[in-house]
Image (tube, rainbow, N blue to C red):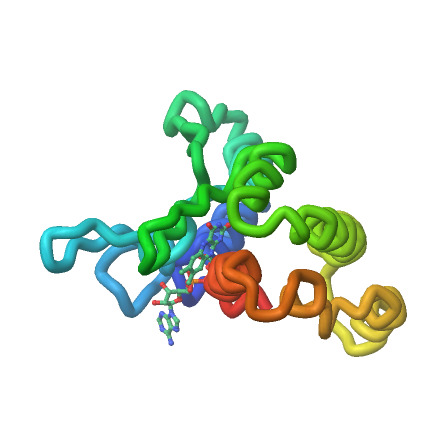
Length: 193
Ligand SMILES: Cc1cc2nc3c(=O)[nH]c(=O)nc-3n(C[C@H](O)[C@H](O)[C@H](O)COP(=O)(O)OP(=O)(O)OC[C@H]3O[C@@H](n4cnc5c(N)ncnc54)[C@H](O)[C@@H]3O)c2cc1C
């Protein structure tokens, strides 16, 4: 049997290892850390529990796909529970911004801070949807093994200005809302791109 070694036991490495195993390879997965999961860790410090990475599983179907490869059902092994809210931002003046769930619930939170930002948020959602449709739906399962393949995706992403659709361009400059979305998105995006 042919063998592969996967370096890194985060979500990416585990998924690659499972796919190789499903194709019949003899798989060894190695990691410098003592536990599986990569950034998906929970650790305790100073009496508090911290997520080191993913709190919200944004694409559960990708995990289900891995179970399907082995004719297993994810729900027989783990239970994903809905979070409400996804994130709570607490500001020094005591105000709270609860993010997540639906566009309507987010708009209700925005109104508490700055009603003018509601339209800006809807523009942000629409701009993000277009980038998602291209960058995720169309491209995320495409292998970029060569430069030519990569270049074919660039015109669409340039057209959508995905490289500079900064949250600050779409929300009022310096608003508390922009700060919330900036920190929430930055923590994920710095890992993803
Ligand atoms: C603060 C934060 C919040 C996030 N929130 C979310 C969220 O809510 N939802 C979501 O979907 N995503 C979220 N993400 C993104 C998500 O965590 C990552 O996209 C995902 O965990 C990356 O998985 P990965 O396998 O690519 O990399 P990692 O999880 O980083 O795994 C890489 C592994 O490789 C190992 N490794 C690296 N180099 C070597 C080496 N030379 N030898 C041996 N081992 C090595 C590392 O120890 C690590 O275990 C968040 C990320 C962060 C940082």
